[in-house]
Structures are given as C-alpha cells and as structure tokens.
Picture 1 (cartoon, one colour):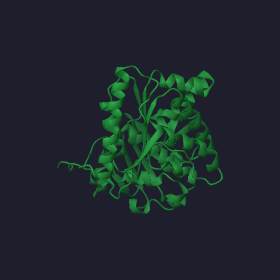
Picture 2: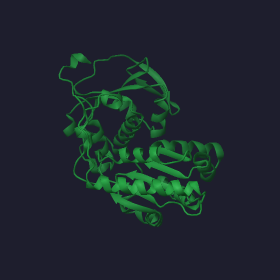
Picture 3: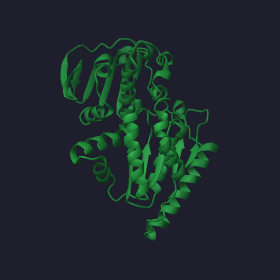
Picture 4: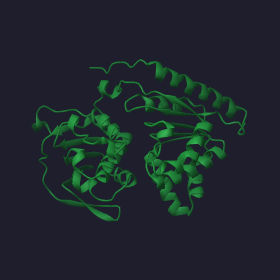
Amino acid sequence: MKAPEIVLDSDQQRAADRLDAIAARLGKRWQFRNRAKAARGLYLWGGPGRGKTMLMNRFFAAAPSNRKRRYHFHEFFARLNAGIHEYGTIDASAAALLGDAELICFDEFHVHDSGDARLVSRLLELLFARHITLVVTSNYPPERLLPNPYMHPMFVPTIEWILEHLDVVSVNGPRDYRTLSERHTGFAAGHYVVGSCEVIGAVELPVAHRMLRARALENGELTVDFAELCGIPVSAADFLELTRGIRKWVVCGVPPMGTVPPDWVMRFVNLVDVLYDADLELSIFAEAPLAALGGEIALVPDLYRTLSRLGELAEPVNLETR
C-alpha cells in the first residue's frame, strides 16, 4: 500500500514559498559573487512531524551551489567539539567545518543548557560575521530557546541576533504527518513491542572511554538494555560514533520515562534523534505502550519529539516474528 500523498497545508506552503525565495536570491548572489549582501535566512519552527525536515531537504537540494552544508544539530556539535580538541579554539574548529560555505542548514536547532548556549552564541556570531545564509529547523520558537528562567537572560542577546538575521516562520499546525506514514524502511523498519526481549547473552564494546555491556553484537546488530545504554554518561556524539559500525539497534527493557532520572531520558532522546537522522533501524522492547511511555515529559523538553518518531515503528501482533 502506498503512503498517502502529502499536500502542503497553508503553513507549510508559506514556508516553502519563503525557502524558494531564498534559493532564488542565493542563485543571484552566487552568480554575481556578492558576498556583502547575504540572502536573509529563515528560522522554521513547529512541533514534531510537521514536515520541517522535508521542507529543508527540498530547499537544500534545489539551492544552486556546491558551497552549502547541511547538518543535523547533534552531528554538528559532535564535530565542533572534536575540532575544539584538535585545533584548540571554537573559532578554528568552526572555520574548518564551515569551509567556504555560503549556505548552512541546521536541522533540529535547540539550546537547553548554558554550555551549549555559549557555543551557539559564538557560532552564530561567526556565521553572521561571514555573511553566511543560515536556515534552521527547530521545535521551539527563538524566545523559548534555553528556557531555564535562571539561564535564559544570558541567551537573550543571541536570540536578538537570530531575530535580526533570520525571518521566523511557524509551521506549528495540529497534524503530525508521521502518523500518516506507511514507510517500512530504515528507522521505520523497526518494531515497538510491549514485552520482554528474548535475546540472552553478554558482550562488551568500548564507548566513551568505558565498556558498554550489551546482550549481543553480531553482524552490525546491537541488542542492549535501556539501563546499560542510557544509564551511563554518554553523549549524542558517542551514539554517532557507534553508528559507524552498528546499523541495527534493539533496545530492551525500556521503562516509562517518568520512572527514570531525567539524564537517562535525555540520553534516550539523543539516541532516537541520532538513529532517526541516520535512518537506522530501531526496535524497542518496552514495559508500557507508547501512549504511556512519556511520563512527565516536561522534565525533558525534547521527549515529545522522540515519542512522535517512535510512532513510526510497527507494533507486531505476534512476538514470535521477532
């Protein structure tokens, strides 16, 4: 059965028209080599499943230049931090990543802690100083970045830069288009199972200068307990590193998120983000149905995006099929 064709709703069409206009201006800018007048960028925000990534990907493919870069925000930060260790400064690391780019696209732009906020502030300062056109997608409007009331004031000047250089367009409509998807490849080839994982075994693999204890690792497929994977201090960059050799993931014993510490939940969010962006198959063996998995989602701002993405996983009727 074919997935139903998605017709752009009014918010999406407005965003698509704005992106088309940027692409047209970029083409003229590059044609006449006028770096002094960067095409004004776009900050595209809305809830999960609203087609933001689809719109960005279409725009990026159509942008008439080979001097363009597209990054998932987790991926960029992993590379940025690695470059800081290699080159010694954020400026040198950012310069190596940006190269001669005149267009940068960030998918899932977000800021939740003060450490990230400082890096983001400096990065945006460098981007805007170089007259690079910036297009980002986010689940949050600019004024809700770094929402912690104690830390938010420090980020207000950066929010003002964003508003100065980028147009803000909302696609925050009510429909989650992931619920209409009938895709069964990549990430969506996995399953969401309420029940126990029958794989039994023990294997260790290195991650983040420690050993991760898993149930099995064979032919690029990792089977691991939630507590072992998300209960240790690993980052999105560590998950990215693991995806180099692991193409199929099975996570067992996933509890309701309200029953575990917020830092465990955040690691689970990062894991799903990384696997979704890499389009790698993920299967979940959970203690509760997806509708009850969220718990107190307010404790981790991005969990609702994770739940939307897990909604793409099939729910097998017969556990014997796994």
